[in-house]
Each structure stands twice: as structure tokens, then as C-alpha cells.
Length: 206
Image (cartoon, rainbow, N blue to C red):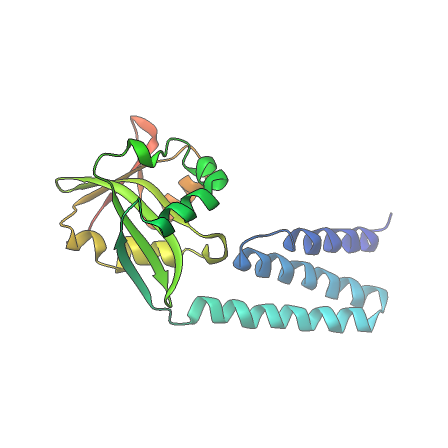
């Protein structure tokens, strides 16, 4: 098998993999990479329709990714109760994934839970559930619905919303055994606690 054939197979795999992504952002990035490989493949074998079509797909993905990362979204935090019908529906509807990212989460065992809906352009995009003790907020679950996982909701929650400052929180703690979620926490500014590898802390700026 020649190198050009291998390139074609790799491009096919990347495009196919992109279509399995539940996150729109990841889909766009992978699809753009696969299209770039296919465009190169088309040029190398002299198939200009393949090269030009996939070149256009690359440009389309660049345009939409630029729009995603630069558009001005309006975020809001709306306080709720964990026994609200809509909150209970979302918890039940997303239970399998919540169990995967937050295996210790059990809303029934939380004493005096704090619950807030995260809205983006008036659309519900996630749930925050935790407990506050004095100036420390313990995150039990910070769950963002799949189509909105581009980190912007988390950046708003922890950096821009003023939600925790309004509650006079000085420190936020979270536990995670999921590598993907640990990576998310680090990106949001959480630092791992040396004595407890699954525990993370975030200092709220005054």
C-alpha cells in the first residue's frame, strides 16, 4: 500500500470519527482535519473534484468554528430547586452520563443543596448542584449538556458570572475520578490537591 493510499484511508477514518462526535465543536475540528487530508489526497491523485470539495468543507468549518469562538453569547444563572420537575427530568434524562462523570453524585443525599440552571442565550445548557458551608462551595455536579461543551459555559460560571462572589464564596472544591472532567477542571482554573489526587480547589478572586 502506497503512502497516498494510506493518506486516503486515514482521511476516511477521521471524517467518519468526526460524525460520531456529540459535541458540535469536536465534530467541526475533526471534520475539518479529515477534509484537509482528503483535499490533499485529491490533489495528489489528480482528482480535482475531491480536492476542491473538501477544500470548501475546510473553509466552511473554519467559518463556523470562528463564529463559535467569537460570537457574543448571553449567559445567565437561574436558581432552582433539586425537586423542581424540570430539574428532576434533566437529572433522569442524563443519568447515565452524569453517573459516568460524577459517580458519587446522589441528589437525595445532599443536605441543603444549592441548585442553579445555566442558561445561554435563554437556552438551558446545564446544571450546577452543590453545597455551601461558610465561604466554601463544594461542587457535587457541574453538568453541561452535550451540544454546549465548548468550555464557554464553564468559563462564565467560574470566571465571569460573579455567581460565587455574590454568594460570598472564597473557595470552590470539586471531586472527580474522570480524566476528561479533571482536564475540564484544570482548564477552568482548578488546582489538584496534592494529598488527594481526585480533589480540586479553585480560589475565587475578590
